[in-house]
Length: 335
Length: 198
Image 1: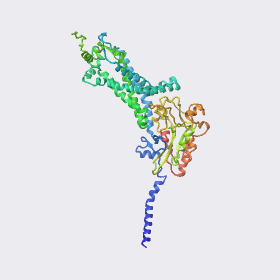
Image 2 (image 1 turned 180 degrees about the horizontal axis):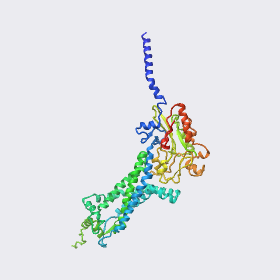
Image 3 (image 1 turned 30 degrees about the vertical axis):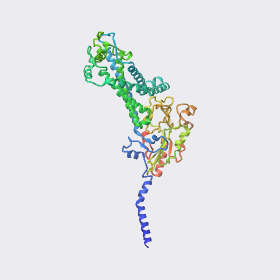
Image 4 (image 1 turned 90 degrees about the vertical axis):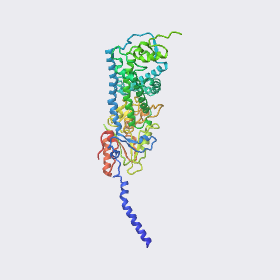
């Protein structure tokens, strides 16, 4: 009898349990109420269909393919083809216009006391090698990079799709491969020149006097590098490192993450490139047509003593002191 | 002219991956490249759904917008195609694509990507229709033969639909009304700027 009662209670308990759990079980398998829709997925991501990606599992080896939809990826297109080309045009065109205006108004900066005929060594062969490796690769990287940004609007209509495609293809190869010597040369110039480029109080004086650029006869004292050159150096170092890092990430995108990461790297790469290219245009100007006697420093490495005294007075004193000579150039009598 | 679209009825997809296989076979797609893939959402959980996804052939395609060499073009059937002779393999289209469609063969060192490859809606490329050159670069041109994309044509549950957007939308609406539920046209709002209302 007890046995029967036990069974009866068991059945009742079981049916109660089933009755209680039935709606839940049903809810889990009801395709109507548990239908996964794009909207509900986006809402579940908390962003109502604008930001996060809907991702799942894929059975193919490429697990990145598990990202199904990421609507935000589209937004970058507006910046890429809208603002970025104009930023380049304004940055580069603006700098060229500025320098042209400066040249027309002030003309070439001459060596005030004329060439002395005596020279001193400013940059050793290895320094010049690093500089020219960095600069030649940078110019090609800049030209091929600018081509990626504005070539489609400027060169493509002129030469046609086939020629432009071939050109851009070689440009991309050059950009990818010359990035490596650029990075090596960047490390070299940091090693050679970082000690000479630590900001000092002297730089404030130089900046206050506008580097003597705007007034004749004014030559603020400077060591091996003046404040203007330090600005160039740190622009190249910080910009170059940023370009190298973001460029590396774009070369190896699978290490860099998802499309939104690539977009971020490309955006930084583009903006830094526009800024650094503008700085370098100014650097090229002042190192060639802009200033008499300046180009020798990177050509033969020997600069005229009068040029050096006007622009790097303290550095000349250092060199002379090291050579056991006075600033006046008077040699010690032989003993 | 038709406005070609894809529509994956996620309530019918059984994740058999036949569309993926058919695509690879039909176009002799190289190793490592999948023009189409099946993504399973909520895998193993209540409400699991699988969606077959490839290039959606967007209206105002972002890939075409960002391409630095402008190698994309849209056909009269609103299919987004690209010219591999012009493509430089920079990868920008893959940055901009919301569907992860652009693929790249690994060809050389230093991250040098090959020419981009993606779903052509089985309609080849800029070469003459059904030519050998077209087949080698882009695969079969079924549209030129009067056929629809093979992935959709051979889908065993008729989950994946391809064809004129209005017609496949109507088929899907009919299904949803008949069975009483539907999880929507995946990606349509992102690709075409419009959702499918039932």
